[in-house]
Image (tube, rainbow, N blue to C red; front, side, top):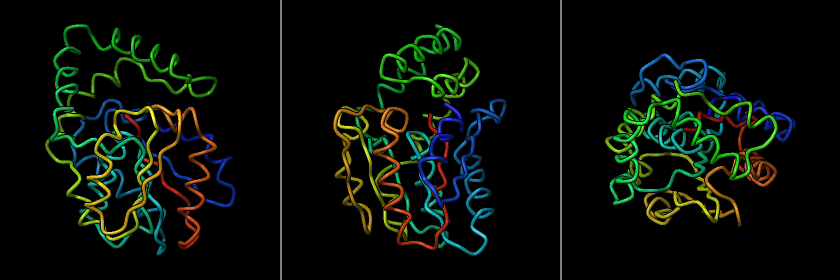
Length: 233
């Protein structure tokens, strides 16, 4: 996915400034190698550029959620809230084996073939209309082994102990990435857990109204700055 997945939220979040960014290896940055430091730098430039003295609500889905957590832990004092969507599976758990396996398989089958299969799955899970236009090509999938290696090395629920703002943990009821949400909630200083019934890992794409309502609520107590979605996969 790329930053275009957040385009509908500009309409769904009236009165809020919505800024979406591509992480390295995705969208406009597809040629850039993925590292945790590079991803955090992209997020920092966006957050601190749009803040203009205000605190913002940072939103990340999947890979974007993991990298948003690293940013929030490393650079306190900038956020009014952190919203993680589909990003509460502990990389240290056995679940990480799925992604290590994916990283081994991708070079064998090729990034283009993997893109066709994965994008077909996303359509089956509910991607429609403008969402389909944002589905990535093989060049974006080629970045995923490095991206998920970064998650497994640098991410985990313990980071939330260093986050100095309220944390909202959002997952689809059918998303396997919610499996360790309680670990994340217990690690955070202040956390709220929301499960959207019948939603999968593609919650921002298939249930935009439900997520938008949560984002409006998350932004309401702050300074008026809009949510800042980071990249997805």
